[in-house]
Length: 387
Image (cartoon, rainbow, N blue to C red; front, top):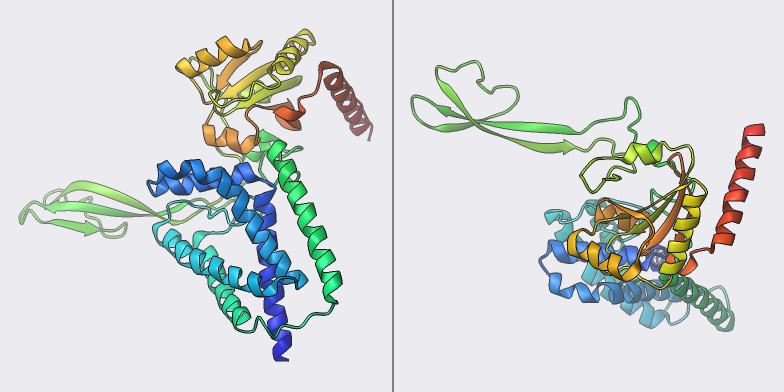
């Protein structure tokens, strides 16, 4: 019975570590953005250079520790490393829960978003299991012979490393973000009828005109009618309960003149191409010619082709002088653009606000291939209408 409990503990830690390492490993750029958020919130901007290497190494270590425990290979070292991991991250997540520098810990990437306090309590459970596992690491029992366990571990590790490499050079193989293919951006920004709204509590400060004392009041007792004895000073509002937040809430297309033209593009019945480049100073020019050719072709077909970026001023002008883009630039929030696609630049194909396809700059299609994509979309649309 005792051995079975320790086996269950090994499975729980192994599964959690594998899941955590997997969902972050297939989205290394997304995890690096989250690490940068942490570093900036702690005024450690000078460590940002380590964000991307850490976004590769940490999920890889997590996954291999979990795979080692689950497969029953290298369990002695894996149990030690699991305890070291939890001994570091448990107090860190307590600090994050108290200080709340970021609203999402990012421990499960975009696949599973939990609060900072939920993350801490999850880690408390895991560190208890990790301690027990560490104590009994030499007495664990396994169902399969070591030879099969080793083959299983090697196969899982190879597949993971391949997926990590793929995700580094392409958009994530699994997309858990609100901007995945098939999503309608306009619908994603709507709040359902009857959805809960944010609940705030207000604190009012009034000065007593006789004693000159400033006193604190709440919504139920503030003396707003008693102007003979009290004078309003200030008010503070605190969020008590978070209401419904649409999955897409920061998507804006803004013209160079500052005009919000989001609806103009999202409500277009024709095909729309958006080249997303969150930072033009870091934008790859590897397939810029392909992008320029696609823009020229799209316009010749009567389709709109624009670029959405957060870069302005000299950065934008420098890029134009290097890349000679054949499309116009519009502007959006940098964090939103990073969320839309993990590629700088990346390319989206939309129709009436629905994302039909996404391409990493390593995968930009030629004009001929894009024509086939459009033709296939038209056939699919025709079949859907017939049904």
